[in-house]
Image (cartoon, rainbow, N blue to C red):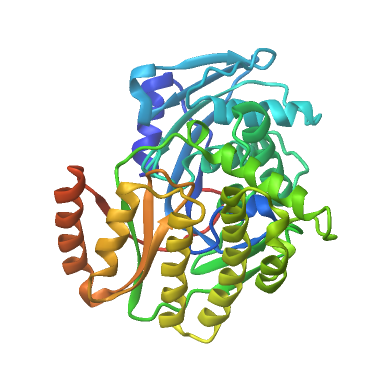
Length: 384
């Protein structure tokens, strides 16, 4: 892959490259829509992700090209004119602008060729991968004194302030801090984290792309976040808490009537229950109890469907078809929802059968063709 992209860089820019980089995509095994509610999440990096071939320039021009959007050609900017254009360039440009606003010395332009083998719009964090990758490139090219955790924080800010999506920090953290064969238990309130070895034995992670695209900024993501913020404010009239993630199930049930709207109650219920589910799932995994882990994945999807209402026909059809198959330990939607991907734990000996059967059922009901990926757990941002 690297050699092909180096050749392509020379064709596009008519220059020799200087460095090459990679940042993974991510999948969240459990703990969905609770990163911005102060809960704990359990993502892992993947071996698919975003590549960048880079060359420093002597002027202040920024020239960007994506193999995924070849029709756009080379898009040119300058360090003093970083413009949001509501396209893929918003992610690297937003990262660059945040770095400049923070006072990091970036005094030359550069050419970058990007290529991502994460399905666009599938919910595997192609945007966060692009942001963190750009931050890592800036650190490398300009010898910046910045730790990965700080790159992660700036990447989240770039998406919030420049791109305009009010996301939590999980996606950026997962792609920046990923470790091979390990998942990350991340407390989104404190950013305390630990690595948990994924002991899947004769099982694998199977991702199914519904091919129902969803634009995160256009989805109901911001609406859900506002509903949770309002519910929290209502609970805070009585309870001394800073986030929904601080609540036990018992404490929530005792006080849920402080939340005046039934829809907001359901949103808050998901956040509280999902946070508890995540802790239980990690404990089950540490005891090598995949059956319990899978059960909690299923419960997570039901909550996302009924209480948070972010699934929809395509995700529900895919997950329900997976639940019917022998060898599926657990399955759920992953990512923001409203399309995108599911994640499941499956027995290796049944994988081909599962893909065939689920694919047929999914196409019959939705008229779309799903794509399936048996994925490995990969390392975070790095030079290659």
